[in-house]
Length: 95
Image (tube, rainbow, N blue to C red; front, side, top):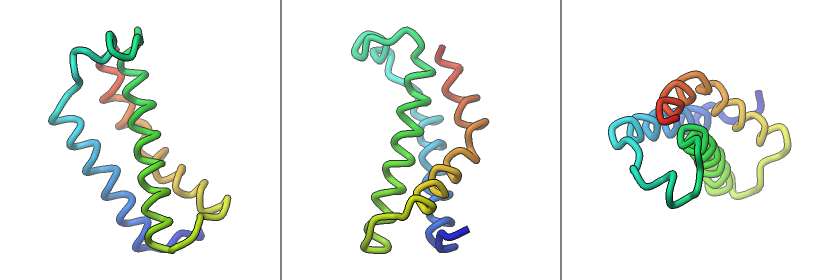
């Protein structure tokens, strides 16, 4: 593992806290209509994963004042993927 332990800790907290917020807020009843999607849960799951990876990559740039290497980028993806079961369980309820 290449990522700094403090950065990993903060990224895990971001994922956990954001998922908790999504769980308490639920989903807009207009999502399917506004975004023209049939599987709302799949759409929201993809949106959430993209949001977490994008936020973590941006945080990395601020934290380290540089772009992540390919290995660091994949470690960030791995941190999010470690929560794949919890993320899927929640969002697939909307399908």
